[in-house]
Image 1 (spheres, rainbow, N blue to C red):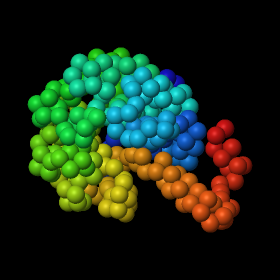
Image 2: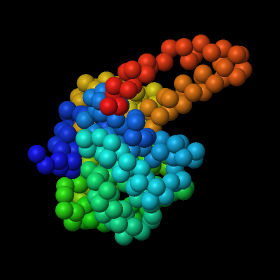
Image 3: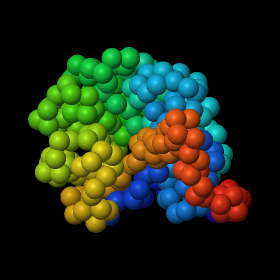
Length: 271
């Protein structure tokens, strides 16, 4: 049977019946997540940057991101989506080229945000919409199915409110985006408003105290189609490293490393 990751990925997006997009940071974490039941893998721009010893937001090049994504595509037999920040450039033509290159490395889709990196401020409304329009047109021209996710990150970054976010995702919808994503709205009520603003799938980020406390059933009731993990799993490993290293170096206490996942289990998941 022919492997068609784009079509398989699109079929997972069912409003009210969300799947989990498991964001990985290397081939090993991608293989483990797939073996544990993930239906699709996402890259994480932050987690990938961390593996390179760099901070989040605008510190990874397009070539680096594409090479990293290709490694994850090769590691698993489930769809892989790319978290590609602002598309690695301001101009709509750059976003379109990023879409084309993403299709060439085998990605099932990518997300493009409206943040004018390296700053946290958003692109002006009209430019933000034109960037998504160009990306959507490029996606439709690819030989295989490909999902373009349009992100409105201004609430998360503290630059606009829910009304502006709704205005943007409605415009992104009309511009051809396949899935809409407002990162970390202020309340669950706002998340419901986001889902109600479009007939297309909506992604929710399970991060922070509000959204990590929700169950899959609650996300389903709100109308969410996809729950992404972002950099949360990578940051959870950082918490383990931080706590263990503090105990070891400051107290001479090695007990935090006494209860680790047995190598036999890890090896089995990586086969």
